[in-house]
Length: 348
Ligand SMILES: Nc1ncnc2c1ncn2[C@@H]1O[C@H](COP(=O)(O)OP(=O)(O)OP(=O)(O)O)[C@@H](O)[C@H]1O
Ligand SMILES: [Mg+2]
Image (cartoon, rainbow, N blue to C red; front, top):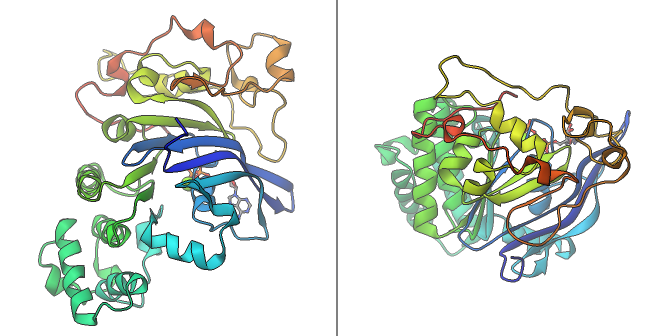
């Protein structure tokens, strides 16, 4: 689907030099996001979700980081070739990001109002202070902050985690970006506030028509919000597809493991099937398929150890597994992902 894609990450590799060796944080990742589309990115902690997003925004600190390979096409233009100035213009104007930790992403020494006004004026210098403040109130109103005019003068520490997350969303949509990257936007929040923040995000998307890359470890959030999903493991994409297809009949043993480890709402006795073993080192990546040391399909087969499986390019539902056809009979019941809309997180 790359022809008309808004964002096309192609064969991206990002490494970090550390005292233990080179960390292959993003190891030849490809995925596309169409205009207005919501794509979920899931995977265990440390699998490269955030680093991929930071690369899109040109925010990989070099050193210790380095883009080792790949292209990041936004509207057909390679962002990796863009000048610092061009990137600065794109960030916040065309692409914006909601960072993983809202409270520490806001500047503690400026009021919420000053920070939103700064975002607005950075991208429209002709905007008067007065007009920017009016727009800030409008934005806070939109994300459900009551008494916005009175609260503009408050500092981040006076706001709860959920409110700070709303402020971050307000800033992210302030300039009507075409792409919004939301990195674990609800992880730090309790369940009720999570649901409200997701509603705000959904409305913001509806309102601005922005495409969203939604990074989360919570498959329930993906089921609720996304159309397509990208599953990452050890810095690579192991499976991608429409949410419904991938949840109903996963083609990669890792995805099956993720789904099976969700609490079952329909089971009489709660039985969790965590994926055995530990995530691999990204310094010494296992040979062949990175998942092979934990995979129950492998059963002594050399091919999984020797040959890295490709994700392929044909069709929407694709998996990087030599033996994915052997999973075709295995399905995960709707109960595992919360048939009635309840959400369940996978352990980190
Ligand atoms: N500046 C850095 N220096 C060295 N290693 C790094 C650096 N930034 C990230 N990494 C490594 O890159 C890998 C991917 O990290 P990333 O933050 O993308 O994970 P993630 O999938 O977002 O995890 P989480 O779900 O915990 O947020 C990790 O192994 C991490 O330790
Ligand atoms: Mg992360």
